Structure formats: structure tokens, C-alpha cells
Length: 235
Image 1 (tube, helix red, strand yellow):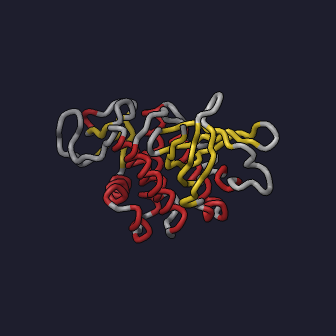
Image 2 (spheres, helix red, strand yellow):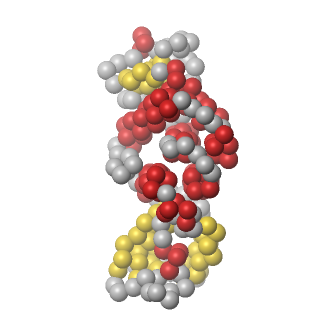
Image 3 (cartoon, rainbow, N blue to C red):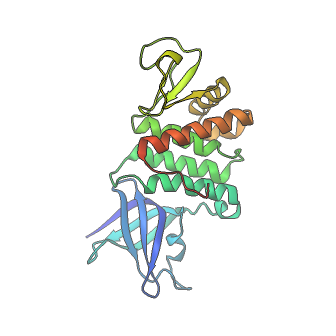
């Protein structure tokens, strides 16, 4: 029995002479491993479908150990990411976050991923904008949203803000602890602006570098505390 899944290639491992085992993040089934037979051959019909970032409709059939891909209609290869080292590493960092998740299906996150890759590949966004926007969306979808004007502990209106890394929430100076990091006004403004802006309009934003770098740093620390995983080192 065959099935069609909409998926994005996260990576893979070469096996045998010309085969490849591919990690695929799909809309319908979440993260799955599939076998792609003969795709490393020079004349292979599906040779481009094995590449990281490839987005398409994959036809899969039951195999002896894992599903086998028998056909692909490529929707987008995001080829432009390969020609810009900064965009490539930023995209790899986003895929790495998906790779380290569980295997369950999450359609809103799949859509978030597609939007992020499109913005990264085709729009003239400043470095880290797309990555930071994706992390904000990831936190919201995972139930870790933390952008608020009230202290999550006592409810006080915030003038100075601290992110309590232990619980992933913003608190006031009176409720902070040793695991809290201060969020400057520039950082908080950058976070709110990124959260409120659609991917298609990120290229129109102008955020001061100190605010965006601080925002990216806070998001990275929060991700690492929430998941126990490190952001891809090359990023």
C-alpha cells in the first residue's frame, strides 16, 4: 500500500552503493525515516529529492524495515540556501531543532517551518531574523510562550524584565532567582516586533543590532533550557 506525504528532508545517511536513508519531516506523519533507492547515482530520477531542505510530495510504500520512497514531486528545493553560507547555517539550525523533536505530527509547526525556509531563502532578511522568528513560533506552539507585560509569578506590571530560565517565564525583579537573565528594553522590543511580524514582512523590519542579538541570545538560552538540546554549533 502506498501513501503520499508532504515532507521536508532534514538529513540522511548513505547506505550500500547508491542508496540513502533520509530523515523526513512530514505534515501527515511527523518525523519519519525513509529509504531512497539508487538516488546517489548520476542519472537517478530522484537524486535532487535526497538533498537537505528539499520540500515535496513523497510517495512512500511499505518496506522490509522502513518505508521506501517510490516517487517525489518537488515543491521547492530552497536551492538558494546553498549559495549563501549564513543563510545555509541559519536554515540548518532551524532543521536541527525539528530533528531533535519527537516523531509526532504537528501541522502548525510544519507550516511554520515552510514559512521560515521560504523567508530565509527568498527574502532579503537580516541575519538571525528568521531564526529568532521561528523560535518564537516554536515556543508558542509548544506551550512555552513567554512574552507578557505582567510578572508570571506575582502579576506585577513589568518595568524591568527577567526571564526565569528554570520555568521559561518572564518575572519582575522581586521574583527573579539565580537562574534569571535580564531582558533589556531593546531586547524585549525586538522580541515583540518579531513576534508580531509575518514572515513575508520580516525584510521590512529594522531592529537595532544590539536588540536583535540580545533577542537571539535569550531565545537560544530559553530553547536550551526548555529542551536540554544545544543549538547547532556551526550556527
